[in-house]
Amino acid sequence: MKALAHFKTITRHRHEVIKNCKKAGILWQGLFHDLSKYSPKEFFVGAKYYLGTKSPNDMERRVKGYSAAWMHHKGRNKHHFEYWTDYNPETRKYGPVKMPIRYVKEMFCDRVAASKIYQGENYRDSHPYEYFDMGRANRLIHEETSDILEKLLLMLRDEGEEKTFSYIRNLTDY
Image 1 (spheres, rainbow, N blue to C red):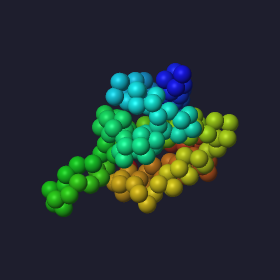
Image 2: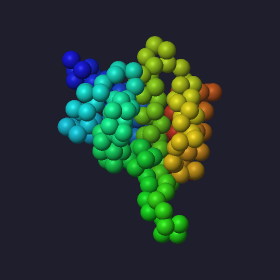
Image 3: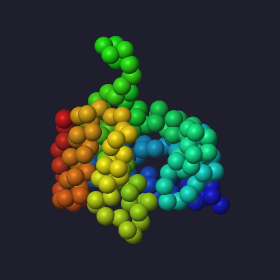
Image 4: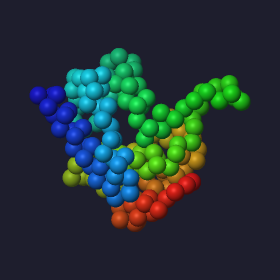
């Protein structure tokens, strides 16, 4: 039964992202959003650690010390800032890379959808920003990418979905 519940959750989430991507003017991206979650490497782990109230990757991390499903997922989905790290020849270290704006838009749509799915009836437009803010200290994200995502999340919180998606549709660069 956990497999069916997990399937329903990731499918509801995906459909919510598709709706958001349509509002953001990136429907085509939304149609391909998170398809890797249905792959065996992600789906079976997700079903095993399914909780219903948050990502099963958190539980896998607690049990194993890492999440293989998450590492698989972030390596295939460009709307996650964790995908955008690379070796910097100047610093000779790995670090964050500025995300193309099309993926920042999808990341915003994903965060809003996740908050709606996990918060259910308790969802408020402030939830995506609150979640973003809570992880600020531990996030390895390019500063400009973080700034634009924060701007969008604050706009959602303060001005609502209609105005934010209208702004996103016209957003072409940082």
